[in-house]
Length: 223
Image 1 (tube, rainbow, N blue to C red):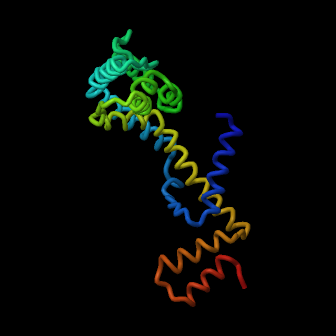
Image 2 (cartoon, one colour; image 1 turned 90 degrees about the horizontal axis):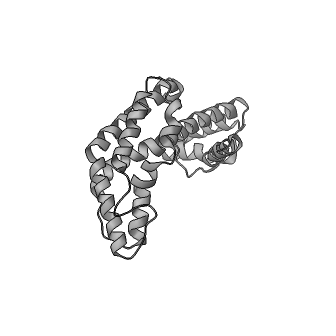
């Protein structure tokens, strides 16, 4: 994604949050005081280590189940581009080697050096991720239960998509807090801000009407 596209993406998020009074966006001010580098480092290592543990527990079994999926597709007369009845390589061990390679490089404290290598489309996302598994099962109308791998799928999601999702969530929080501060400093108060103020004061509190109206007047600079 190019820089311009990323900027447009975040601007649209902020516009929608700011303009849509129905959206109950909860602001978490803790992100203003925490060290985000340390936060993302801890977030990364926690989710990476949890994935490694779960892969060692369930990865081999998942691989064998996917071979079974390939057999069922073949027996049904289909031909999958992803799952074969007799895979050429031991894909479980390929992931083990990939994990070992990443772990050897984890001496660096800056996790951003590894984000691309871990989150990019690869064997893990194309072969083992639930999205493709479900597509193939539905495509050939098969009966094969993969729910026993839900925890492993959750760990795969967190290293493949979770880091970016967390980054977007925190960035949006910080950007929206900054937007509120800028609007206050320039005395900008639009209709949607008024609606939000009325909702918060009349519906979410028991302040007397006179005090409430005074507060709204003060916030909106209405004389």
